[in-house]
Image 1 (cartoon, rainbow, N blue to C red):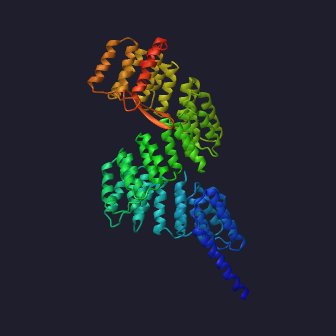
Image 2: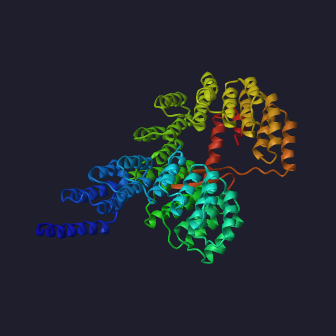
Image 3: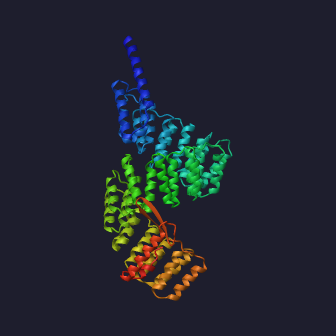
Length: 617
C-alpha cells in the first residue's frame, strides 16, 4: 500500500508536467519537425507506463493536429499503444483525421473502433459526418442506421451535423427533410441548411431559407451572414449584399471578424466591384490568410491581374504567410499575364518554405510554366509530383497541346489511361486541340468517336468546335460543315468562328462569306466579326462588300475594343494598349516600331500582306 501511494504522486506529477509541455507548445516549425517533438513526448508516455491514460493520449493528439498530415500512420499507432481504447480517445482520433488531407481515414478509424467494441456517442458522429462530406462518392445514409441504433436521432448536435453532411454530399432535398423534422432549430441548424444550399449551387433557395430564419426568433451569427453573402455573390445581387453589409455588419449586429470580412470581399469581387472589395478589405480589423486570398482571387476573377500580384506582394510585406490556395491563385495570375519571373519566384517560395505541392498547386505550377513558354520546366514539375490525379495530367496534356507538341500530348494521354486515371471533358478537349494543331486528323476522328463509346462522355459544344477546327485546318471543309449540321445542340459563335478561320486559311471565300454573315447576325455587337468579314471581302477583292460591312459596323455603333497585352521585363509587368500612350516610354516604343516597319519594307520581308489583315479576335 505505501509503495502504491508513493508511485501515484510521481505519475501524477509526470502527467501534469507532460500536459504542461503540450499546452505551452505552439507550432513554430514545419509539420515534420513538430511531429518529431510530439513523438518524443509520446515515447516518454510509453516508457513511463502512461500509455493507458486516455486523457493524456487525447491531449497529445489534440496538440499534434497541425502536424498530423505529415504522417497519417502515426494516428493509428495510438490505437496500438492504448491497451483499452475508450470513446474519448477514439473521438479525438476521428476528429483529427476528419481535419487531415485524407478524411477517408476517419471512416476507417470508425470501423476499427467498432471492431474493438467501443460504442459511439453524440461526439463521434459530428466528426464522422464532417469527414464523410469531404470525401467523394460517399453515401451519408450508411450512418443513419447507426445514429438511430445508438438512440441519437433526436440529439440536436447530431441532427445539425447530419443536415450539413447530407447537403454537402448533394442530397440537399433529404437535408431539408431532416431539418423540417427537427423539434427545435437553433442558429447552427439554419446555417447548416443555408450553407448546404450554397454549396449545392442553389443560392435562391439559400436566401429563401434565410428569409424563413428571419421570421423566427433565432438570431443570426457570423457564419450565417457569411453563407448569405456567398449566396448573394453567386446570384450577382450586389444590392442585397450591400444591404446585408450595412444592416448586419456595419451596424455591429454581427461581429466583423476575418471570416465575415473575407465573405464581404468575395461577394463584392464576384459581383465585379473590386474597388469596393478593396475598401472592405482595408476596413477589416483582423486580416488572416483567407482575407488576403479572397482579395487576390477577386482581382483575378475581374481580370485585374497586375493588381492581384501587387496585393500578393503587400501580403508578404505584411509578413502574412500564404497557403497553398493563395499560391495557386497567384500562379494562375502569372500564367495569364505571362509573368514568368513572378511565377518562378512563387515556385522558389514554395520550395524554400517547405510547402507541400498538392495536386492543385502542382497543376497551377504546370499551367504557369507551360503558358509562359517553359514546357520543359512544366514537365519537371509534373514528374516530381508524388501523386498524380486527373488535374496534373490534364494540365500537362494541355501544355504540350498549346506548344504544338501533338505527339507528346497523345503519348501522355496514353500513359494516363494506362495508369488508371479516367479522363474528363477538359482532358479530351486538350488532346483534340493537340490533334488540331498537329494536323493529326485520323487520330482526332478516332478520339472524338471514342468519347462516348470508350470514356462514357458526351461531346460538348467545345469538342465539336475543336473538331471543326481540326477538319477545317486540314482542308475538310465539307466534312466540318456536315459535323456542324449534325450537332445535337445549337452551334455557338465559337464553332462558326472556327469554320470561318478555316475558310480564311483555305481561301474558301464563298463559304467564308456565308459563315461571316451568320456570325454578324449571332453577335451584332462583336467588333471582331465585322473586321474579319471585311478582311475576307478585301482578300477576294470585293471592295464594295468590304465597304458595306464597315459602314454597317459604323451604323450600328459598334466600336472595336483596343487590343491589350502584357510584357514582363526585369520582374516588372508592363501593360500595352493598342494606340494608347499610357506607358511612359510610348514615344520611344513607337519610334522603334516605325523604324522596324520601314526596314522590313525595304528588305521585302513581308511577302504576304494577307497575314497583316488577318484578325484572330
